[in-house]
Image (cartoon, rainbow, N blue to C red; front, side, top):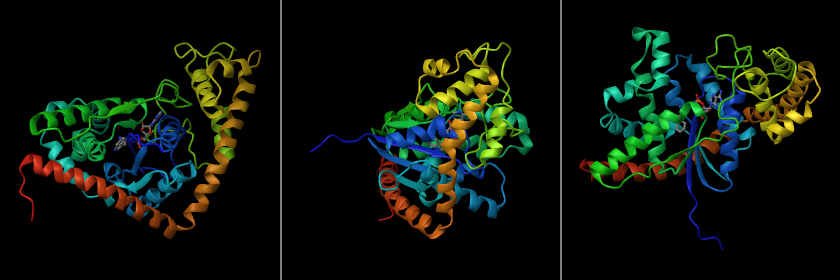
Length: 337
Ligand code: TYM
């Protein structure tokens, strides 16, 4: 019998669009699937975070369920992990407030994602929720006493803040939180836009032409990959500085085939960019076809998805409310009795 205690893993993803993109999958979800086999894993669709982006209620409802369906289609197994919706567990908001009271205004102002987004929108159109977003994220993680947080490279600073807040609370009020580590793999941690290969693939990309959406048709995705920006020269070589477009496609190819970058390069020795892009398109489409079909199938039975989510929320709530109780007690809040 194996008596070792499994490490706790937590991560989250926003339901801001009808489909996740390949960056979400390779940067985060692929690791979530692997980690559920060896860890006590909690994964949530962070609908409260997504409220920082304006959306129509009916779309929002659909996107949240579509997110859950895609996560299961990509390999999350509700029997192996705890899969839930953030707003189903009220302790997230409750802990977030406590952590807001421990976060410096300057400290929150230095978060680069907030700076970028608020600069683009202007201060009158930037909601306060965007400012406190990383603190709610810290609450998501600390509530579950997570040891590891599998995310893409762009989340490194938010994980750092989470660690700082956990340590700060522990040193002021006594050991309460596990201080987590980011779990950021080198391969796939930053998948770039196919049309602008020095910027990350992002749901908020203006054109959309460089973003591979998991739920798009094979025709659309093939077209996007065949029109990906490549670089000068002719050889298919991994060189992020000189050949960011080719390197990005090689990263995608190697992550989806399980080959190393060297093996991937060898596959295209002596071949031109045209053959290379066709091969990448084929690999992507073949990988995503069954995922899209399975997600569509799952979405036909909303009642089943909701049943799974109810079980997930109950499991998550049991862990989260215990932590929140300890936090309130450590702070000196009087229990209701
Ligand atoms: P979101 O929904 O924006 O992104 C979900 C995950 O996808 C990763 N990612 C990428 N990885 C590689 N290349 C890309 N181009 C790329 N684009 C996105 C992100 O790093 C992320 O891991 N703030 C979080 C959501 C969150 C969260 C949490 C994460 C809320 N609470 C608690 C972990 C733990 C986010 O960026 O979501």
